[in-house]
Each structure stands twice: as C-alpha cells, then as structure tokens.
Length: 234
Image (cartoon, helix red, strand yellow):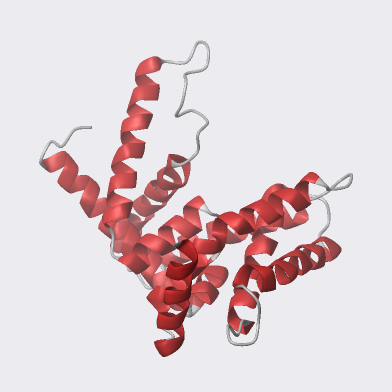
C-alpha cells in the first residue's frame, strides 16, 4: 500500500510540479535520510563534525536527488537518492573543519530568524516582532525530549508539568497552521533545516521562505492568545 501511495504521489507531482506535493514527498523520505546520516555518523573518525552536520548534508543530498530523479528511467527513488545522499555526506566531510560547520550553521539559523522577523519593520513593530524570537526558541525546544520527560533529581515537578503543557499547546497550534507555514516551521525548528534548504525542498526562494516563516510565527502568537482567551486547558 505504501508503494502504491508513493507512486500516486509522484504521478500527481510530476503532472503539475505542485509545491505542496513536493513537500509531502520530501517529508516522506526524511526518516530514511536520518537513518543514512546516523549510519555514516556511527562510522565517524576522530574529531568528526557533529551529527547535525551529517544530517544537513544528507538532506541536501536528498533535495539534489529529488530534482534529478526520473521515475521512468531510474529505480525506486530511495535507491537512486541513497548514492547522492552518501556522496553529499562525503563531500561535506571533505570541506568541514572541527566544530566550524556546526557553529556556522547554528549562527546562520539565528541570523535568518532575526532577519525574517525584523526586516522592513518600523521601530515599534520591530520590538513587537522580537517577541517572536522568544516564541521561536520555545518552539525549537518543544520537541526536545530533554527536560520534557521524567524530571531529573531535584528538578521542580511543577516546572516539568508546565513545560509539557507548553509543548502540547505549541504542537496543537503548529498542526493547525496552513500547510506551507506548518511545514516550514517544523522543518526549520524541529529538523534544523535552514531557509535555503527549506526553499529548495519546496521550490520557493529563500526570501519567500523568510516571509512565510514570519507569518507562521505570527499565526502561532495569535493561536496562543486564543487558547489563553478561551481558557483551553490540556
């Protein structure tokens, strides 16, 4: 059944190159990309980069494979993509230095978020938009298991409960967002994909991804206010 669904998705996507279908297809392959990256990382040598770098290179290989795949000529997509994903990891390792790639990637993500939220705003609006940065940090933390599962010894159990409730609210609101905004926020914060890579995956410019990211966080803020206004509890 899964193969039939995959084939149907490809057929529908190739008929019109729809960006929404493109996103659904790529998201379908992300778990396998994670597995390939983890396998490569497990075989790492001394002073190897962080796992996040392996994952980023693997995702880049996935996007490149997606753009070059021809179902009529090639084998299954993941058979075709596997070679490019592993090649992208090897290419990334050749250009990486210890710690540098990880630091640069994190810094680039932070700069993208700030630029997306503040660019083009007047002073008053910029201050309001900076509140979205805090929301973005909370969103990024929302799917991290550390601190949201069992409470460490000496940790306030009420604080753990509040973090769990925050996580549930954020996840509920993310899933209620329009498809493009939902996918962009999940990929950027939960998968640590930068705007350029998200744009490549969805067939949109980096600037357009930045706009949709800002809109997504604005919708999330409104969602949180609605939950508080109506006293919805979890």
